Image (cartoon, rainbow, N blue to C red):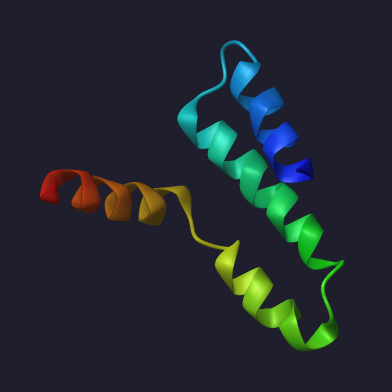
Length: 66
């Protein structure tokens, strides 16, 4: 629920670029990694370290397939 609320706030802010929104969400995801058990920390950080450019390439590839 917390992530959804943060995403809504971020998306509602006027003038934010897609990259800024993505970066903010990733930052919040990394902060959330501090709350997971130590055994899950590395995997959590790995999931939240994807660059915007990499995310955008992957997203465009999926959209093109449809």
